[in-house]
Length: 115
Length: 109
Image (cartoon, rainbow over all chains, first blue to last red; front, top):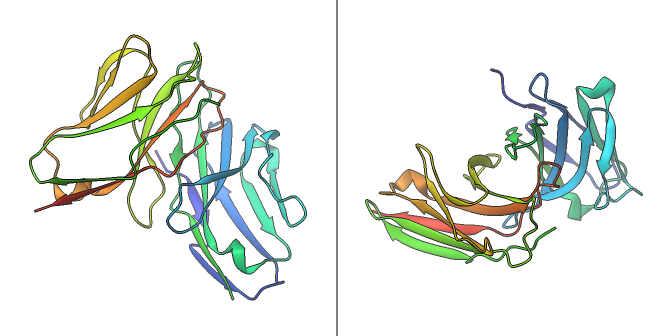
């Protein structure tokens, strides 16, 4: 089966500009996650969707970050305006909801550099 | 969410067995224990999941004692390609997939 698709793979922007990332999860996966991974650190959960509803966005900096999941399938994550400290890899993951399942599938990520 | 503690780094040599222990004293009754592996420039990859006793798959084994307050990921006969960061996560099927800093395993020739 096809994996989690993310685009773009790389993005360089100037601070105060805006940027958007796109994620296409594995077909049929109800749960979708966005993570921010700063170099040398573990992934930090930004937002979790169950279908098109938000389960957890407690760590999403809502003054500059926004995310949506259209019709419970694709998702976009936007940053506006970007700051230097937003430089990181943004990872999307999806998971089928099953009672005994804790496996999520990750995309390759988008490496963002803010200059 | 149960907090996990694991070593920051471990070194090994090719052909050896690597055991990474994760402490999760506050694990809840419904929580599973899951391990992920991450190579540079890639997203994390699921390795194994367990609830109690021992689970084995083609990649690793997971040992969970009766009190479930810790778990040990065992990688048999590692090779250079097993050099990666390994993350221990604890939660139920609705959990937030919260990653810590992980354990950097370096395998040397």
